[in-house]
Length: 83
Image (tube, rainbow, N blue to C red; front, top):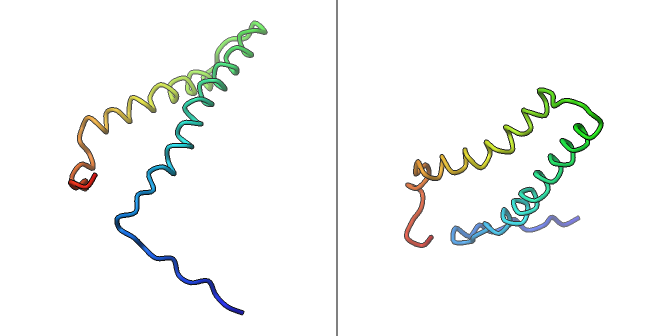
């Protein structure tokens, strides 16, 4: 029985594209699902509960936190001229 060769590591390899597709999918799916959830809740005369408000806060705070981290410059010391 043979074993597979060990993968090689290339420090110049860029795998950023592996994040783009899931990010794009979730940027579209999450607001749609939250809107459908709120619509279904309110359509039947129900009130928004703590779980609904938590989901709204999570959907809004995610991009806000991302921008705050980006604007703070966190992680910029790891970037080099090649990026």
